[in-house]
Length: 390
Image 1 (tube, rainbow, N blue to C red):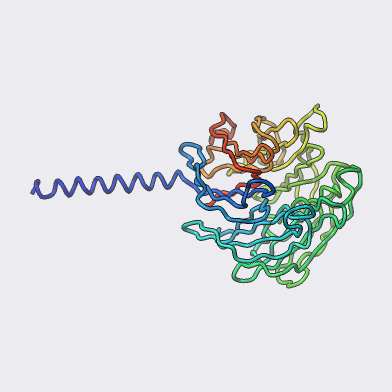
Image 2: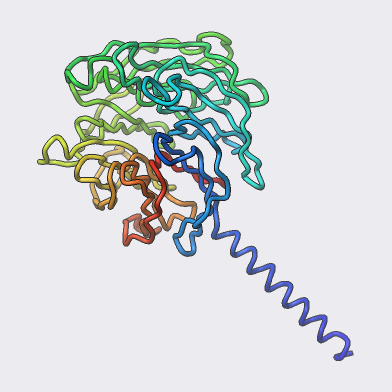
């Protein structure tokens, strides 16, 4: 009996070990999408493998999708669709702003082009999905003062394809800064966690515009809320807005002032409660508030300062008041940190340093959230956005 079954048991043990090793390997590896600007060497959207056991991005891309300036990437909830803005405008290879849709295979993560529509605005720089995913909101920054920035609402059909612009809104600039605020520059558009309100951040107007959202309307699903806008300090330049998971607090980077504004949220209205300097006592060229993201548990807020300081700041978030308390500031070790992302394991932060053509991977302590040593400096031309896939 032993002579018969010992080899079988050994073979079974080897098989189980191989299966266990394979499962462990899969658990530590994730696919990550990187959006880029394509004015130089980049081709578009890149998909790489990231290993959370080592903190390394794979040497070769798993897929490269040719696209013009796919600077911002938006995934649907099920990660079966990807929407990428094509941040085109005057002077670019393609001078028309567009938005592209791709199918995303849930297993292989292969991307396939599906549809594309005009954004009706120059340099579309940000997009977000409405709750229910019937519309895509697109912010066009528009570098040139004519026609200036705008918001576009794009309809999405049942297949997930983009169809047409069903609403467009334009705004009046504050003109406080004679170089950067001559016209509207819409930098982002986000929904409240419950999907009832939509917020438009206009760097040129020094305002956040607020709308009520009605998905049942096939045309003009957005109507101005009351109040219709919230004013920020003159010349501050609002950029990106982020809500706490419970929707009670909101956080806004002010790009030109190099600050983060904290708000209480009450039936759609934003009431400012705190204003935090990202580069206190520094000259204006050291200040450029940009991206912000929460830790998975919402107890920490991470914010980039794109100015000469070039830092990623870590703030503790008070669970009741939502107020911020600075815990750490860490060099991004590059130029122009446009976006960043915490990997699924919570052990690393990937920073897209656009103008130094690199993604810098930093260690992160999952227990404290504090940032540590640099693990990898990965070369890639003009990275602008990073999205992990499940």
